[in-house]
Length: 127
Image 1 (cartoon, rainbow, N blue to C red):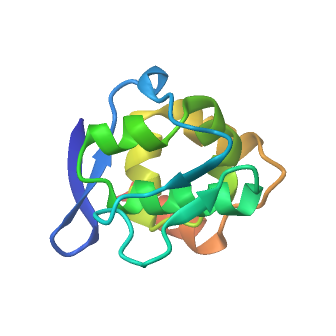
Image 2 (cartoon, rainbow, N blue to C red):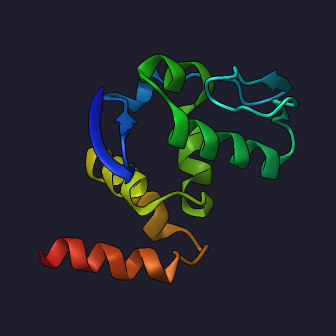
C-alpha cells in the first residue's frame, strides 16, 4: 500500500501494490460501511453500471487502507470503468503512476479524458 497526499488536506491516496489482489463484488446488491459512505442509504446495485461506477469512485476516494480496496474493488471491473470514473486529479495520477495498465486503459478508451485532467497531467509531467 502506498500513501500519497493530494486529494484533499489531511487525506492520503491509498493505492494497492498488486491489482490482481482486487476481487471485490461485481454483481448483486452491497452495502458500504459507514467509514466509506456516511449516508443512511449506503446500498448499491452493482448490476447497474452507473451505480457500480459511483461505488468505485467512493471507495477510491475514501479508502482507509488496502483492506477497503480488496473488499470492494475488482481488478477487471476497475480497468473497464477506469476511463469514465470521476476522480480527483491526485487520485487518478497516483493510481496511473503505480499501475500503468490503468493509464493504458484510459488512453485506449473511446471515452474522452477530462480536459482539465489532461492539462493538469501535462503540467505535472513538465515539472
